[in-house]
Amino acid sequence: MDRLLELGPEFWAAAGETLYMVALTMLFGGAGGFLLGIGLYATRRGGLLPNSVVNNVLNVVINFFRPIPFIIFIAAVQPLTRAVIGVGIGTDAAIFALSLAAAFAIGRIVEQNLLTVRPGVIEAARSMGAGPLRILGTVVVPEALGPLILGYTFIVIAVIDMSAMAGLIGGGGLGYFAQLYGFRQFEPVVTWAAVLLIVVFVQVVQYVGNWLARRVLRR
Amino acid sequence: MALVTLEHVSKSYPAAGRAAEAVVAVDDVSLEIEAGDVYGIIGYSGAGKSTLVRLVNALEPATSGSIRIDGQEITSLRERELRGIRLGIGMIFQQFELFEAKTVRANVAYPLKVAGWSKADIRARVDELLAFVGLSDKAGARPDQLSGGQKQRVGIARALATRPRILLADEATSALDPETTQEVLALLKRVNEEQGVTIIVITHEMDVIQSIATKVAVMDRGRVIEHGDVFDVFSAPRHPSSQRFVGTVVKGVPSPAELAVLRERHEGRIVTCSFRDGDASQARVFLDLAEAGLEFELVYGGINDIRGRAFGHLTLAVRGDDTAIDRALAAVAQHADVTEVR
Image (cartoon, rainbow over all chains, first blue to last red; front, side, top):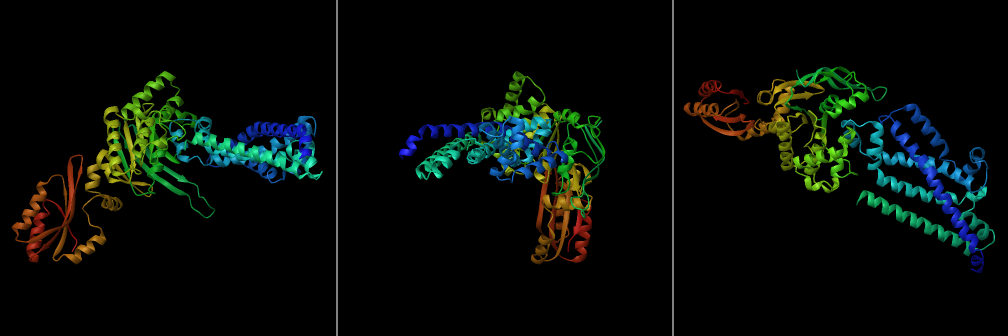
């Protein structure tokens, strides 16, 4: 316990790093994943902008990257990280890897949730003379908004989980803190403090997600 | 010139599997629908009705044939040009297909936004439409707060928003209870009579045709097998398939199973007399049988009314001397179609 109090500044700094990584990952990965998901959804056969070439490419890319365990992915993607960010280690490098991994996962989740929109309402919009892009923006996404919010909530929690591995490339965060000061120095209290704070983050995220989705669904 | 003209229109879907054959949903259909008609298209499910109606607003492209809306050929138009055509054709659906995430007002406003109306014009038009369908007080409600009948009224308001000349109704009352069905049909009738909108109704329900249609086409396996005036088609269907369909929706003709029961329960000869137009001939039939001194009873039957014109079928069990019955039936045949079923 004394050790934890001693480590107070490091603990809060690590918490800040986690929040920073998760927030920026959701911003970049969230936007990228959204576009990927829209692309997958719109280009599928019988979709609003059917294009089997684009659809196949997107599917192959996502299916290639998604099964890679993040702890391997973060290392494997390092050359690309260095090319884009300029450095291969540090918090920003971790955010790049996180965003990329999150985008592939989000792409699938967005696609799945958009597929829950009844084809009938899309047909109705078409019968009113609406074009495919307008239908995507004003019918498909609004109609799927509730499940989309829940999908994103699920991903935020997955990103909190993945961010714990950022320490591998010097990204910091609560996962690294628990490893360094808790596990390696035989201080279970320190480890559990990090665990508890992560649980609190997850609970808050889930609560906000549920609340937002309920507001949108009005149920 | 007809408002909607279909000439030798076919629609087939490519084979799904390697061994499967292409599915022909609509097979060489030619129809003319005049402005002001309420044109019913009936048939069993799978007959191709829903596909046919989707060819009219090009939600589905026709495989071959010509479709003209108000003289304009639409089969050669590109998707972008078709959007303009669709603004002039409203459509309502069996499952209403309202946008659940939008309010009633936003649902009705949607096609107006697509058509590029100004905010003020949209507001005024939506108010007008909601008043027309009797839902002014529901403008701020969400579709999930409405009953089925109210949802379809919103659907109708939305479909009429851009003042289309044609309204397509795809099984628009099939998900509603009988009372609500009548409400919605009364509304569609007003749409036709007060606003002069030509309506094409797809249905498998006799009620719908009986209450609002002026003309009807019967579809079976992708083909229009019979079409014309509603009264003519329903009182005297010519094609065996339409006889079968009409038999299932028109009261008065016993089914083979019912006929078997009747034969068992009643002695004597059983005849079905079919009447068209007017009750005078019915009275004559009873009179002829009574004058011949025959004992007879009414065992099955029904009279249908289509826009004030009646037709019906009465099945009688007749007992007595065979030659007397023959003679009496010959007399009856002067006023009605007589079919002896035993």
